[in-house]
Image 1 (cartoon, rainbow, N blue to C red):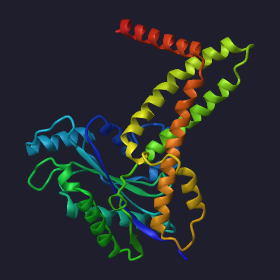
Image 2 (cartoon, rainbow, N blue to C red; image 1 turned 90 degrees about the vertical axis):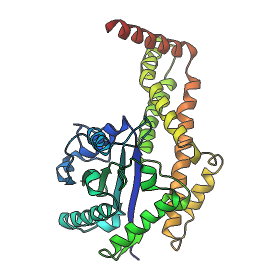
Image 3 (cartoon, one colour; image 1 turned 60 degrees about the vertical axis):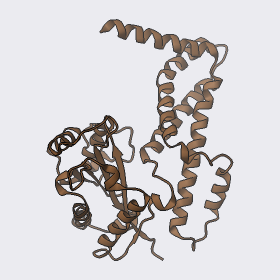
Image 4 (tube, one colour; image 1 turned 45 degrees about the horizontal axis):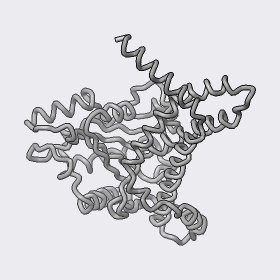
Length: 327
């Protein structure tokens, strides 16, 4: 039996400094993407725009907001990003022209539900595992108010977005099934970048574990200095992950003690089980592992000798002092 093919639509809201980050990712303005191993630079030339940005995302959003006469606060949402794709099975065997046609149809759907002139960019990535489109727009309403909340709405309206998207796309692609929205599961979407960030941190943890395990009387001084230097990268990265974990802490409130049960449920899933239920279980398992990985990368700090931590603190303070007087 062929695997189900789901239409996928996800939204994310951005307020300020992070806008330049999503622009760098979407427009591929960096030379290297070590932080995203899914990107294949040899295929980046295959990416294409359906709408090219006329200026930087933030500059374009501020221009549109000013022209509309809107007031803004520091926490105002200035850019909304729609991630549009389908499950990998849908794209199997499709030629570039067919893929482009699919995303053009999806773009038409967005234009029918959001003023076309508010769209900053619509770019299709072909250099990752599954073709997908990042479409960014300024959340201006028909009467020229800046209000992402009104456009995206509450859980009910997000469900309506999912319904309308599927109803639009299924006319041309009858094999597509309606994707399961986060609002229906009662859960938001943890971005893939958070899991990738944890994967990098886990590799750092393993390196630190290796150095700690190799500490001996004969190499104590040398290894201590190496660990102190390593902590200059590791501790800030742990702090950055702590910020992310706090942001998504509602996902982890019921995680404790459930990971083994989730793993067993995943292992026992019957072929007849609804695909949406399978995906829901896999997502919960992924979240449980994210929490346990976080606990592991923070727990190792308790094993570092006090004098090594003191050496790290001293190095950091010296660097701050030097920067202060370099100005």
